[in-house]
Amino acid sequence: MFSVFQELAAALQSSNPSAAQQAHSTLSSMTPAAAASSQSNSPFATKFQALGQALQSGNLQAAQQAFSNLQQDAIRGAGLGGHHHHHHGGG
Image (cartoon, rainbow, N blue to C red):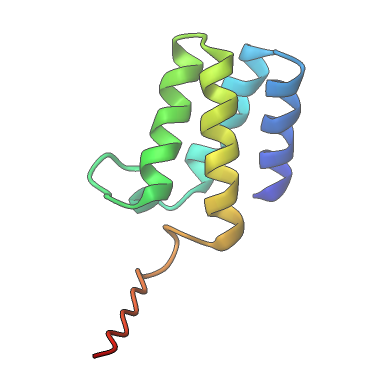
């Protein structure tokens, strides 16, 4: 999966929208349906969709921004597991 991320990064850096769209659709098919679906509320899904929309509209700047956000999530594994929120309130 990360090789496709690198492909996508390279396509965005070289301003190659068709290659970027191809990498994005490859990622879509590799990503679990839940993570890529519009019903999912995970940050990963939201950013993944934003990236797709930016690519479709040909807005490479927005796509690069969405991609860097997405990459941070992917590296942390956010959106691929449960949400862990730990709040410790001190009196």
